[in-house]
Every structure is written in structure tokens, then in C-alpha cells.
Length: 202
Image 1 (cartoon, rainbow, N blue to C red):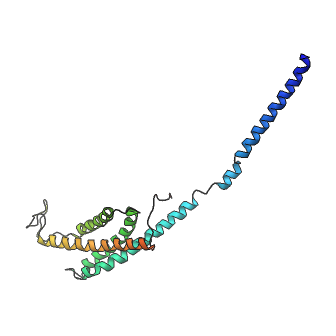
Image 2 (tube, rainbow, N blue to C red):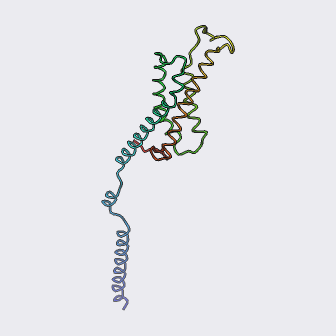
Image 3 (tube, helix red, strand yellow):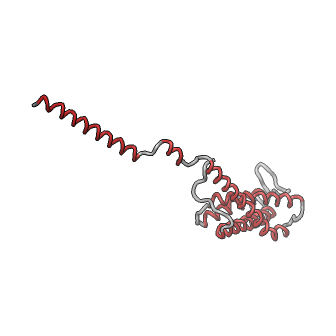
């Protein structure tokens, strides 16, 4: 009896093992995604990034042009009452201001992004205005160098330099402040678009 029952037990054991193996393989197949399906659903990596980056460049160009137009418009009243108005140096200086306003629009958009901090916005305006005013400062004819000495009231700078620097700072604050105001208005009305989060990789 024992010798007759052994083959039967082995056969049942073999059938049970094969059945369990088949069931397990079928379950694995039904839950896994075929390799060709993974390739089919994988999103392209480069093309959308290039499209998004080109859109950001277009928006930055729009911000630069808006800054140029608005800043130039609000600075006209001060420009025409400048002591050296309509001279060659005056024209060169205001051509440089136009270039700075164009760059200001791009930098302002990248720096401020979606931040609501007024301190950050004022900091960008102030940085451009101070840089512009210092670049336009001219030493008086009576100044001597090494060390710089120009006379009263401070020795390092005299009254004409102080008055000229103050006028240049006010003009720069009006120009860049007006440009920032125009950019914020454009952002709020949807004419321009802010940068949100990280930029797409090129």
C-alpha cells in the first residue's frame, strides 16, 4: 500500500506546485507594466523644457520693453530741466539710462518673482538707482587726486558734486521707481507674467 500511495502523493504535490507557480506568474504579469508601455507613456524630457524656456525669455523681453517705455516716460520732466539738457553728454547719459531701464525690467522680474515683500522690490529699485547716480557723478575741475580732494564742505566732494549727485539720484529713483510701478501693474493685470518657482533647464 505504501509503495502504491507514494507516486500518487508525488503527482498531487507536483500538480499543486505547478498550479501555484502559474497563478503567481499570472499575478506578476497583470500588475507589471510592459517595457514598451513604459517607453510609450514616458514624457519627453527636452522639448517641453525648451518651449517653457523660450516662453520665459519672451516674458522677460516684454518686461524689459515695458520698463524701458515707462521709466523713460516718467523721467522726461526731470531730464529736460537738467543743467546740461540737450548737450552731447546729456544725450549719452540718457541713452545709457535707457539701456539700464531695459535691463532693470528683466532683473526685476527675476528678482521679485511672486514675492510680496515691499523691501525686496524697493531694494532692487534702490540698487539700480544708486548705481546709476554714482556712475553719473563727475569730479569738479578743481579736484586733486591721490587722495581725492575737491574742497568744502566735505573735502572728498564739493557742493557742485553733491548737488549733481543728488539730482542724478532723484532722477534715477523716479525712472526705476516708475518702471517698477509699471511692471507691477502689468503683473496684476495679466499683461506680464511673473516667474513662479524654478526656471526650466535648458
